[in-house]
Structures are given as structure tokens and as C-alpha cells.
Length: 190
Image (cartoon, rainbow, N blue to C red; front, side, top):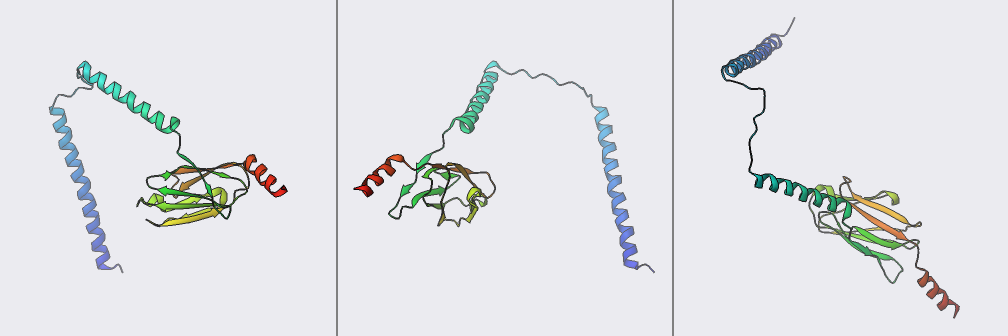
């Protein structure tokens, strides 16, 4: 009833499995026999290092720790204010190359924003930009400018990230300048 080839294949597979298992057992037995022949201690042996090496390693570790603290906590992101065009649209260009440059863009609330993302980095992480607060997900082709437009209504800080959420930037939405509003009001009254 059973197929001859299936039966022979099963027997051959079992033979291979038992052969591998017994080979590992033989290898383990020979390793244990070799280990028992050599003198083995259960304690670590102290290796003395010159004082200069200890100082250099300690200073290097402290320096790297300081660099990490500065990088993640103390470094300020490069900020750029969006430039208003003739159509009252705020524009900024963001270079995507190992991150976002500038990583913080300042815009005014209630006015349309146009961000141009120019991707220079070929890594797959930066193939997309996500601005979740404005429901934007845009693909960024390599060496091309991709335009993203939206209008922020409320003030606050809105993040944008790469597709893998590793690289981040921020859009700082501020209230419209009162000096500009006063100037436009004075012009319209005159």
C-alpha cells in the first residue's frame, strides 16, 4: 500500500538523523575526554595592565559617554523659517541626506505650507516621509524634489519622520506675527 519511494525516503531520512545525532555524541565525548585531560580551573585569572592603558580606556569611555549625551540631549536641531512667496504660501526646502536638513521648520498657523523634500541618500529608510498629524505619506524618489502641501490651523510642534521612524524632523507652527497683522490692518484702513 505504501509507496516504495516514500518508505525508502523515510528510512534514509531516519538514518541521516541518527547518523548526525551519533556523530554529535561522538564529537561531544571526544571533547569531554580532551577537556578532562587538561587542567581546568573555574576561576578567572587576573591579567595586569599598565596604568596608562587603564587611564586611556577610562578617559575614552567617559569621552564617548559625553559625546552621546551631547548628541541626544544637548545638540540643538538646525532650524529654518519658511519663506512666504507671492501667493502667501510658506515654502521651505528640506534636504534628505542621512537625516533632514533643516530638521526644524518654523511656519505660521493658518497659512498654506509647501515643503520640498530633495532626497540625496539612497538608503531605503529615507524613501518615504510621514507627517502623521496632517495625514501625509509621500514617497521620495532619489535625486528628485517632492512637494508636500498642507495648511496648519493650530499652533504646536508637529513631527515628520522617515518610513521606519528612525530619522525625525519637526514643524513648529507659530501664531501669525501681530506686527504683520497690524501693518496689513493699517494699510487696508488707509
